Amino acid sequence: MDPFKNMSDWKRNMDSFFGDNFWNEFEGILKPQLPQVNLYKKDKEIICIASIPGLRDLNNIEVFVFESTLEIKGDIKISEPGTQLLQEEILQGSFERKIDLPYAVRDDKIEAAYQRGLLVIRLHRLITSENKTNKIAIKDLEDNY
Image (tube, rainbow, N blue to C red; front, top):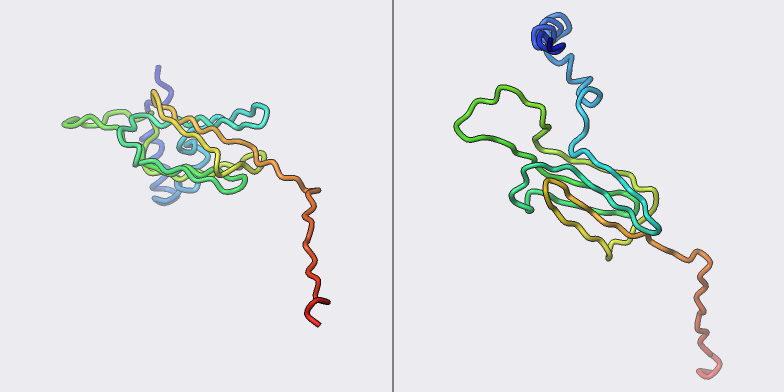
C-alpha cells in the first residue's frame, strides 16, 4: 500500500481551505535544497560533492568562492522527449545554493570536475600569518636640507 497515494487529493483540499500559496511556506522544509551536497574535511582541504544529475553542458553550472562561502548556481533539466511526466522524485530546476565553509579558502587553488552525476570541488585552506610583521623602510629626509 502506497502511503502517499492520496497525497495530491489531501494537498488540493488543504489548498482550497488555506489558500493556493499555503504550501509555498513549507517548500524549503519539505523539499531538500538543490543541489544536495556532502562536505568533507581533510588536513587543509575541503571537498564538496554536489549531486547534479543529467548535466550535459558544463556551462549550465557556475561555481563561485568568496572567503568561506561556496556558491553553486545552475539548472538541472531531466526530460524524456515526447513523453508525459507521471511521477517526479528526482529534484530538478534552477537552483542557487550558498554553502558556509568551516574556514576561508584560497581562491587561486580550486579544482572542480564533473563525473557520473557528481560535481566534485576541491578547496584549499587559506593560511594567513596574523603575526606577520612587515619592515617599513624609513626615508632619510636630512639629505634634502
